[in-house]
Amino acid sequence: MKKVQETAEKIRTMEIRGAGRIAKAAAEAIRDYTAGLEAASMEDFSARIREVSDLLISTRPTAVSLPNAVKLSSRYSSGNVEEARQEILENASRFIERADKALERIGKMGARRIQDGDVIMTHCNSHAALSIITTAFEEGKDISVFATESRPRRQGLLTIRHLNGFGIPTTLIVDSAVRYYMKEVDKVIVGADAIAANGALVNKVGTSQLALAAHEARKSFMVAAETYKFSPSTIVGNPIEIEERAAEEVIDLSILADLPYVKVKNPAFDFTPAEYIDMIITDVGIIPPAMAYTIIKEHLGWELGDL
Ligand code: RI2
Image (cartoon, rainbow, N blue to C red):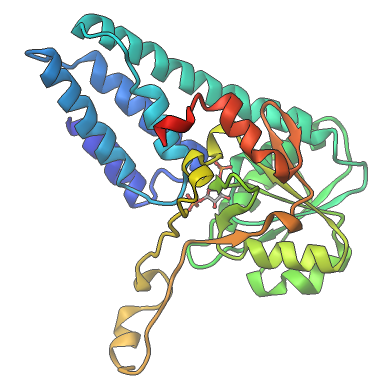
């Protein structure tokens, strides 16, 4: 349990971050916990698996990859402890392998949509989006990137470091310069924390302003998302909760203490409607946002009755 608590804490504090990475870390935590679990009975086993699952899911509310990973990993049908343990170990390992392969597949499929000479804009730090960009570059395409800073946590600094490691010409811009530079851009590629059944995207706050600017300038807006970033519960209209993080990520609290009429809002994500999305590059193919429901139905193993 201690290791699961440590993983949960790392996800909460964003030491482990990125929708794909937190999903994989949760699957690993469940796998390791289950391997060493000493249960007195099947009831005991079930209760403990539920407890760690709930703990992991409670760490961050928005990225649906997290509950998807936990649910897919912790499934079992047997009423026997040893058999149920084996089922979970296999399911968690399968999820981890799926996650690794997904990034590679997205990179390869997405790279086909990148042309020689393309200027790409990206936001925040998405491993899926970066997989496309670096794969295209390694295939020999002469590309360059505009990377946004991504306030308040400045994940853009991770992105420029990553791109620099590949030798990709990169320009760092502040988030508010997105529209100013859009005319120089050919394609926008962002990641996803969640995709709703209607094709709407939830991603790092500021994504929707990139989409709006791209739409205005008639530039292509692409989303890189593994199939486990699609949200089954949105089929029945459940909203995706937007994580509101602490004010101190935005401003020094000592400054705020002297400003009694000021409050700070710090949503970590925003919604981009499907109309602004040209394509979603998933590990099972490139789809229009209107096909999001099909991905949920065919690749997440959810029955309507589960919702
Ligand atoms: P990958 C991140 O969230 C960003 O919003 C990013 O676009 C998204 O997860 C997907 O990232 P945060 O954890 O899974 O930085 O593609 O809040 O790496």
